[in-house]
Image 1 (cartoon, rainbow, N blue to C red):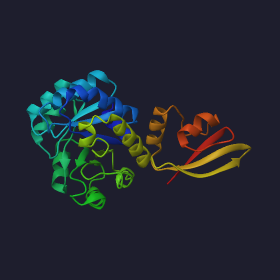
Image 2 (spheres, rainbow, N blue to C red; image 1 turned 45 degrees about the vertical axis):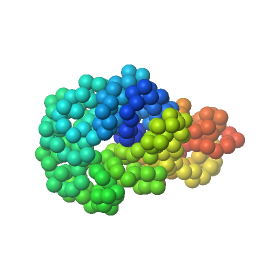
Image 3 (cartoon, rainbow, N blue to C red; image 1 turned 135 degrees about the vertical axis):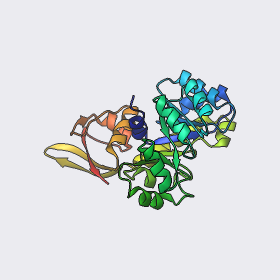
Image 4 (cartoon, one colour; image 1 turned 180 degrees about the vertical axis):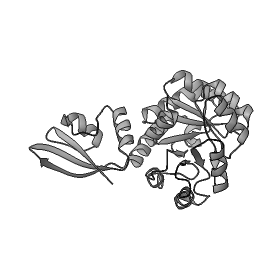
Length: 275
């Protein structure tokens, strides 16, 4: 499996701090039902490896990674538990080298050009921009990416509903890491319905699909919509039961309106334009 490609299609990596393995399956379900079958379980708690194991056993198709991996020993525990990718707050060459030897995706934290060049030296082309907001935000990431056209980023730290779209729409961003849909109090209260609802909302914010117009074109009914990342739209709409390709395809009105959120009178063809 192309882990980077899957992460990019999903577009959001929920950052999870959980110390209750018994709740792991419910959280995995909530995230998956919300449209984000992915999680970065941080090693900020002593039972993180157990959480990873429970999530991967309950939802083997889900991408479950380990975060806040500070040393090789933690990386070993995470991989043994089933983690498919490793994320670190900083760049530890030993962790990167070990993960590459194990053919496991590793995304180390980089906050400046020196970090990026070290990551490149180690053979990486995707890094975590951390802490994103505190390190200068989107403008800093854009400025830092200019000299390194081959490097892509996963910004994490301070990502919220307010700035998610701005980060996600930048073409050098593979995905955004964030914890706002898996807040501590949600997990403490076992409020997995709220996790699911906020996850759905996050997906909609990221996709930012907008209706441009509904019109007749060459004798057919056509919805013209704008989207910044068609690949992500296709992925997430497929999760909601609507599959399509970039060519014009006619859809039943009852099928499409449940996805786009508009009441329609006729079957339609979708046309996307860039935002």
